[in-house]
Image (cartoon, rainbow, N blue to C red; front, top):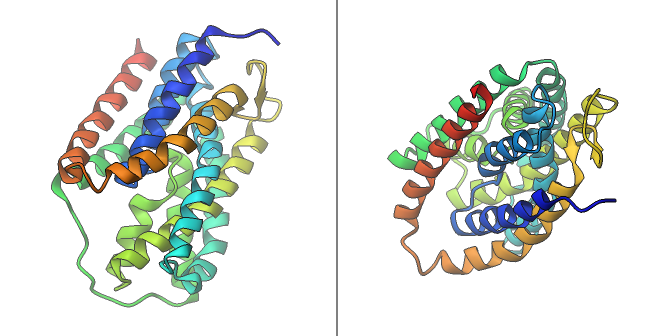
Length: 268
C-alpha cells in the first residue's frame, strides 16, 4: 500500500472536527462533508461520487463520536431511554432508507440539499432560535414518524441528528439537558444505520478509489476518527472558559463559508 501525501490532511481535519464537537456540542458532518468533498475532488476521485463518499465517510466517522457522547450523557443520567426505545425503529428505517435515495441522486443536487440544510443550521446558531415547549411527546406512531424524518434528513447530510432531535424534544416539553443527552443517544443508531446504508449502496460502484468500502474511504475514516477522539475532550474543557455564544456565531459563519467552497469546487 503506497502512502498518499493527501492523507496528511485528514489528521488536521480530525483536529478541527474533534475540537468543535467538544467545544460546541455539534456533530462533525457539517465540517467533514464540504472539506472531504474538496479533498476528494483534489485527489481526482470520480466527480459523480465525491459527495456520496464524503457523506458515507462522515457518517462512519460519527459512530465512535456517538458512542463516546452517549456514554458521557448516560453517566450524568441525562438520557431518556424510553424516548430512545420509542424513536429508534423509525430512526433506523429513515436513515437506512435515505441512503438509497442519496445513492440515486446526482452529486450536484445532493450537494445543494446539504448546503440548504446547513444554511438552516447556521441561521439557528446565529439567531439562537429555540422552539418554545408547546406539547407532550406523541404516541408510538408519532414517535416513529419523527424518527423516520430525523433519520432521513440526517443520512442525507451526514449528521448525528442533534440539530433536529433537540428542537423536536424541546418542543415536546422534554427538559433541555435531557433533550441534549437523549439526542446524543439517538445519534448512535443514526450513525450505525447510515454507515451500513452507504456501505451497501456504494458496494461495487464503478471507479471508486482503492481502500474504499462502499462509499466509505478508509484512510479518511481512520485518520479523522483517531485524531478527533483526542481533541474532543480538549474542546469540552475549553467550553467552560471561552465565550461559547460568540464562538457558535463564528462557527455558523465558517459552516456557510465551507458550504460555498464546496459548491464552488463542484461547479468549477
